[in-house]
Length: 381
Image 1 (cartoon, helix red, strand yellow):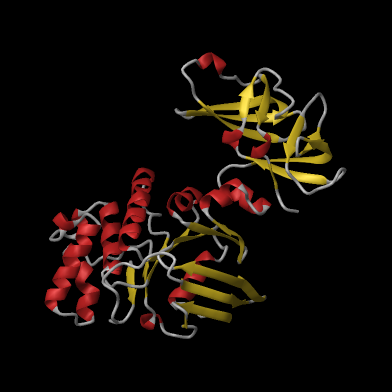
Image 2: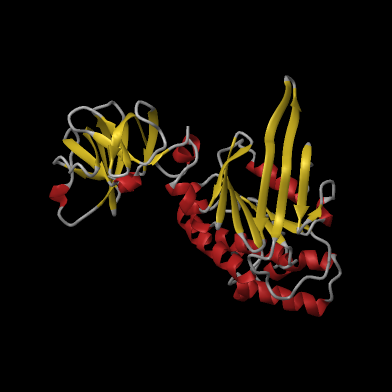
């Protein structure tokens, strides 16, 4: 469903470019709901700036506050405290239809009796835009979403992905300063959802406006976003680029929520070549950069694809742990191994498949896991 929340105001004909200042700013925004036992803090003191032309994602599990945050930007929810700004203007308390943003929901809610073109033109007609201008803008936006040849079709004649693009076109044709998308791909099957991720990023890049995208799907956020805010229990636990969040998670929650991550604990023993060394029995070790001093406990994360699985003990310049293969799952391009280490820690390894299948380990095999020191990351305490 695409809901228009803009008035007919003059807008630039050319798409905006990134770096032109903040499109959206939240200053100390919080939202609490009353319940039978007091209040529930859905969002707690969020400070956030989203730049012009940015593809920004709010990512987190159900109940983390991401949709409530988006609804406060749109004006469908009012913050309990704090300020919402659009293009620098305080819009806290301003009605949704007076905010220069549009919102696209999971349910497209297209009018079944109308053609694609009429669905897209609906908001423009309500605002009494001139017929010639409506025709021009509808034609342009349908070409952008690659549905120009489907203008006369009814929604029932379209696939799920095409209906999603009609809903997107209906929102974009109003030329909002920002488009808010609340899990719009959730109803699509996996293959179509992955294809639409690429399409959404293409469309956003071509129109150049700010996209704010709510999702619980980590892969979706990593694929499309310029930056991501990872939310948990009403707060932002980490804000950064996809690479920053994946490679250097700020908290244990982020490390576990974004992709698959292995967690290893140990005590700092001594330094080796600029890295701290966590010693275990039988020559096992983890090398990691950390500010922790000798004797302190450290929690280290390493991604499954960074780990090499082999039968022989690796060199002393690598992190290395011994374990027993508990499960082997063939995934086509990769094989996933579940390994129980000698310390009792479960580890996951993604190994790229090669033509020589004899290199693959079997359940019950004793193996060594190794990775380069720079691929260990000590989580902040």
